[in-house]
Amino acid sequence: MSLFKPSFSNVSWKILSLSIMTTILMGVGGCQELIDDSLVALGKEELAITSVTQIERKKNGRKIYVRGKVIHRSPFLGSAAYQLKDDTGNVWVFTDNPLPTLGEEVFIRGKVKQESLPIQEQELGSFYLIELQQLTN
Image 1 (tube, rainbow, N blue to C red):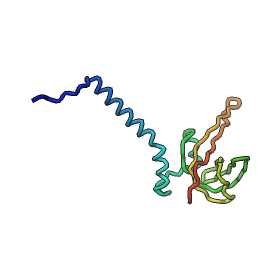
Image 2: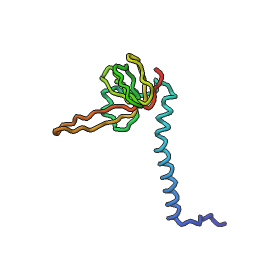
Image 3: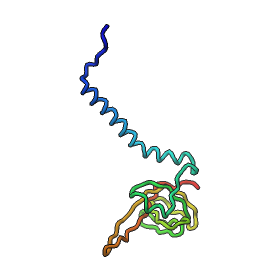
Image 4: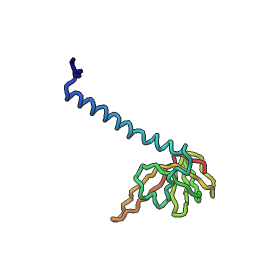
């Protein structure tokens, strides 16, 4: 009775195994965007809503959910911005969508953007949000 022996050497099997594991891990990492998008379908109760004061601690480019009241509006040519206020503070939100009305409560998915503005050894930069999606309250 002969035992089955693969035709690949041990080194070849290790390389093949490493390649498969790398492909799987890269695929899982690339699914984060799909996971983020699927959270909306679960309902607002399942979402982690970020307060305005917490936004500064989020990384540039991070996608978050924010809820608040529109207190200022600024239309631009081809885009617009509005200031959103919650119980902790205010943040500007830039959008290509129609502006919400003053006083309206909005719930959005946005991307954190930070701009550095160092002046005389002081950091005077700020953060704002790029609106990715307006959600229903």
